[in-house]
Length: 341
Ligand code: ADP
Ligand code: MG
Image (cartoon, rainbow, N blue to C red; front, side, top):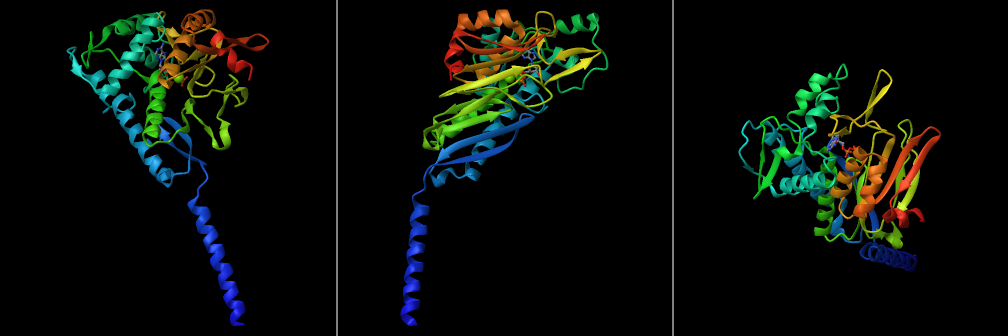
């Protein structure tokens, strides 16, 4: 009896030892965290075998940086650095954070490159047409209202010099909605790099950046949605490697008035929501900030100019247009490798 107990005890000890061994030699596993930011959700997936990378700890670091980005550039927070700049009655330069400087500088560069298709000062027009922090208008704005507002819209009235930012008219309103999500993704990626996480996929509100692969060398795959608002279905699945991707489209954010569809993207040259058949623009590039900004700029340009611009800049771009008989894909030469997957 004693001998039997002893041998049972030994088996139990051996099992315990095995369990301990297994728990010490972690295989890399895929972990996930998620949360809310910038009026939308974020998701991060990453691969690690390091107990230091436990999800609670990683989430804490990710949330901290997102809170910081919001405090710098959200127009939904009246206390943010950007909101305070917008409310400021003076036109004299003011010292700004390096983060805000970096994003505004890039926005102004892409504004120049795109001949004003991207314009981060269109905020008052966005609000006029009912897509900003203020509510939707009861009616379509009149031409008089439109031209009054256009007096204080134009990225040329915004300057950055020597870490200082200034505006030419006190009412200038800077809205970084079109670039901030992408920038947020880049900042989260940087946090992961600093934690020495080498394999990850970061997504904020559909804008993504990824690096490395899943456990077992499986590539990260992402789905580009079909441009329809009634259901979520897949247009195309692609593998990106180490890159960022953003999609801009009028199929989710729009409203209808008297049967006319109003997009949340404004053409700065007309002051009105865009009205063409380009319904989805996907851009793949190194940083998510650029992908996000270019996706909006190309959406404003419309299919023909967007493709010309993509060729000229060697940007990997997939466009989807709405045709009488359904949707049509158009892609730039730099997008070709993703088509053949
Ligand atoms: P989403 O990716 O959610 O479709 P975008 O990144 O394309 O959104 O950005 C849309 C937002 O950008 C709008 O809600 C508006 O605040 C702002 N916006 C609209 N038109 C322009 C423009 N021409 N240039 C810069 N920002 C714009
Ligand atoms: Mg976008």
